[in-house]
Length: 89
Ligand SMILES: [Zn+2]
Image 1 (cartoon, rainbow, N blue to C red):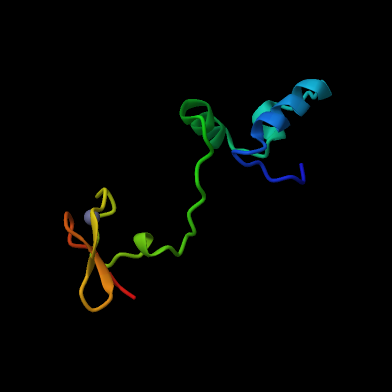
Image 2: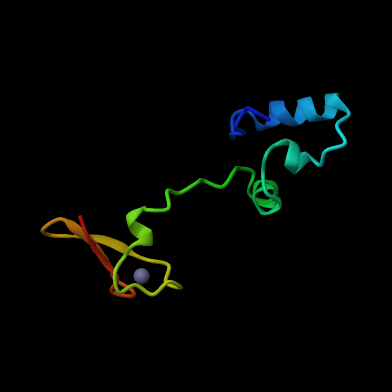
């Protein structure tokens, strides 16, 4: 697979897989991990890849189990109103 699977082309690629008589499991053909494939099956869309250095992964003082409620703060930064994690741009 050289084509990266997206929400736009996944139906087409699945059609190709059906036509190809491939021995390969569908999720492998699509280049997805099993978990990503299950995510697609259950949600009807692919998981968005988030950049690993996104600020929401680098909140200081944050509770990693918190579903952050991010507010911007005056002076240029953000904070979570639930766990008090914060990040300054
Ligand atoms: Zn939080």
